Length: 450
Image 1 (spheres, helix red, strand yellow):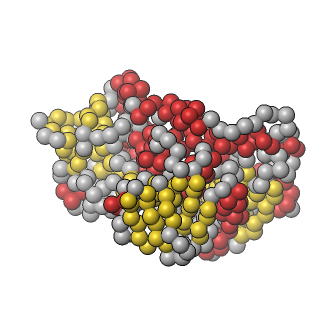
Image 2 (spheres, rainbow, N blue to C red; image 1 turned 90 degrees about the vertical axis):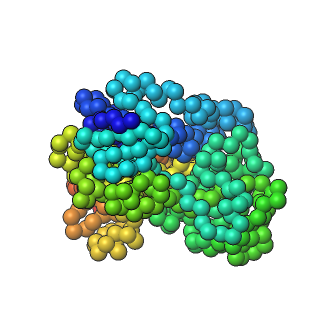
Image 3 (tube, rainbow, N blue to C red; image 1 turned 30 degrees about the vertical axis):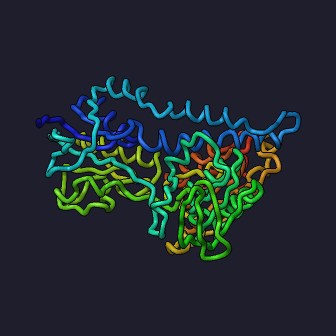
C-alpha cells in the first residue's frame, strides 16, 4: 500500500521527534517511522539513564564536602530503581500522546529509502510530498579485535540498563561514555578497569580536565591503563582481555566505548545515489546537497554527536522545510558539552591548542572554579578549574572550559558568550550575583586584566 504525507521522518529519537513535532504544529501532515522505542537512544540507553546512575555519585560527593550532612554508602537497589523510573522501564507509551496531540502518525517498523521521496516500511510505501528527514542516529562502534564480537560485549545499551552490578567491569575507551560509566559502576560497587590507547582521557578537552577526571577515577578505585590497547578477547564464563601492555585482565562484563557509527547501512541510501554505512552529508540548512527533498539531522550526519545539537539541527531543518531561510550557526567547536563525572567537565568552543592550530592569536587565563564566596557553599575544596580562551585580535571568547562540582548549569553563560562573540568589555559589565560561584566570571576577567 502507498500513502502520501507532507513529510516522512525516519527515526523517532530526540531529533526525529523535534522535527516532526515542529512540522505537525505548523499544520503539515507528518508520519514518523520507528523500529524501536519512541524517544530514542538518549531517552532510554544513553543520556538519561547514565545521568540517573551518576547523580547519586555527585550528591554523595557533595554531601561529604558539607559538614553536618549525614552520608553513607549508596543504596544500589534504590539507585537502579530510580534509573528504571527515569527510563520508564523501557516503555515508550508515555511518549505517544505528545505525537497524537500534534497530529503525527506513528508507523512501527524499519524504514528505508526506496527512491526519491519514498520510504518503505515492510510492505508499505510512504511517499513524501515535501521532504524526507533521516534521523536514524548512531550505534556503538565495535572494533575489529579478535574474539571481541563473540564475547557478547556491552555497549552503552547494556551498560545503562543492567539490572545488577557486575563484580568486575572492563571498560574499553576513555572518552565521555567510558569515563562516565566507569565512575558510575565503580561507585555502585564494581571493580572497574579502564583501558585507553591514548596518553590521557577525554582527549578533546583541555589537559587539566583530563588530569582531574583521571585523578577522580583513580581515587574512586578505577584501575586506569593508559596507552594500552586490547589485542584479543575471549569469554568462557568470565571475559578474558589480552592487552598489548601488562598482564591479561579478567572481568564479568566488557563495555566497549570507543566511538559511534551512523545507522545508515540498512537505510537504502543506494537507492538515491548515496553510500550506505557512511554519514549523510548536509549543507547549512541540513539538506543533502543535490537532493532538495532530503534532510538529515543528528548523529547520522556526523556534524555534532550531541543530543542538544541534534535537536537544534531538527528545529532548523523543520524551518527550512516550512520555507524559511536558515543557516546552521552552532556546529562543531561551538557545540557545548558536559561530562557528568565528579568533577564535571563543561566546555564550549576551542581549546587553547585547537585555537592555535586554527591560526588565532589567543591568550588563556584560568582560576579555581570555587575560588570565590560561592565556593564556600558549593564544591568547597573540590578540584576545579575555569579557563577562558580569548581571541586577542577581536577581544572575544573563542573557548571556555569549566571543571568542578555541579558546574553543568554554568556552561550556558559561556555558550552565549562564545556563540554570540560577546566582547570582553561587555562581559565586564555583566555583574555576577554575590555570593554565587558565577563570580568565577569576575575572577577570570580580573585575571585577564580587565
